[in-house]
Structures are given as structure tokens and as C-alpha cells.
Length: 232
Image (cartoon, rainbow, N blue to C red; front, side, top):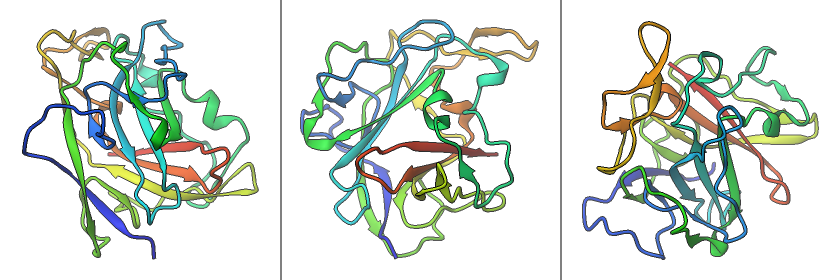
């Protein structure tokens, strides 16, 4: 069974370094050739939320995943990633879906060693370093990489992509997770109780309305793709 790693925020010095590879906020550490993604709904540059470098025991070892999402607009039909219509678990994800569903968010996968601190990005979320702590108990419900997902509801694991490529569990982010923002960051645009988009009154951002998030990847390092599933 694949090892599981809890993602713990480092309580020590929170000064971002070039060597940081798993962290929340700050500046993304992505390849120089990789553009900061733009929201297809409003045209604004997306916000960098977090990235994780997969450890040696992971199928995607030597790869990293950086997660961006738009905080400049809010649309009721795009508050969470588009869900598959077919019955879960064991669903096959159709070809092209994992690219087309990324309208107001972007999942970038790249070789960890190619990441550099991108100072051309406007920092919004406060930097917090993640420490990866190995654990043997998969039932622990915390932010984690690897192992088995801890479902809030029923198992909804996808089986494959394009009928040929197996899917596997990458990591999970617990519900109600809040991303503290830097002092000059604009408020996140949210859907108000009146059903209208307006600036949030809170000094934090939420990723996909703070649902519990499960990330699944393709078992193909040559073309790594990610499916995000939410439960609440």
C-alpha cells in the first residue's frame, strides 16, 4: 500500500525560500516557461492557492502540482469543478474532460526540479510552509498526500481516463479550509445570500467554497492529468 503523508503547516519561520516545494500561498514555484493562468470566465489572472511536491514513494514522485483558481469572479454554475454525469464510483472520465473543465481554475503538473519562485506573480495568499509527515493510519482525516481517501460521504473514486489510463488518489484537502490573505490582497468575489456576486467580507479565500477536496491523477507520468472531486 502506498505511503500516506499528513500535510502540516510549519509553525517556524514563514519566510519563503527558493528551496520550498510544498506550501500554501506566497509565490508559486513553477517553471519559467509556465504562464500564470487566466480565468476563462472573466479574463483576470488566477490566484495561486497551494502546491505540493510528491514524495519519493508516490507514483508521481519528482513531480509537483500547483493549484490556481479565480478569486475575481463568481458564477453559480462554476463554484466547484464540473462533476461527471455518470454514476460513481468506478467511472471512466471521457477524453478531453480534464482539460475542458478547467475554466476558472488551473492544475499545473511539472517536474519539481524545474520550479523557480515566480516573482512576476502578485502575491495574494499568505505563505505557509507544509511539512510532509509520514503516517501509517489511513483513517486519519487530515490534509494529506497518498494513501487512501477519507470520504465524508460514499466512495466516488474514478476508475480510469479515456477507458485506458487508470486513475489513482493523489491528495485531499479538508472541508472549511481557509487561505489567509496578505494585507493588500483584494477580497474574494463570492455569491451573496441574494444570489449576486460581491466582495467577501472576510480576509481569507476559500477554494471551491471550502468543500472537502479529493484530487485524483492519471497513472501516466508522460501526460499527468488531475480530476478534482468535492464533497460537503
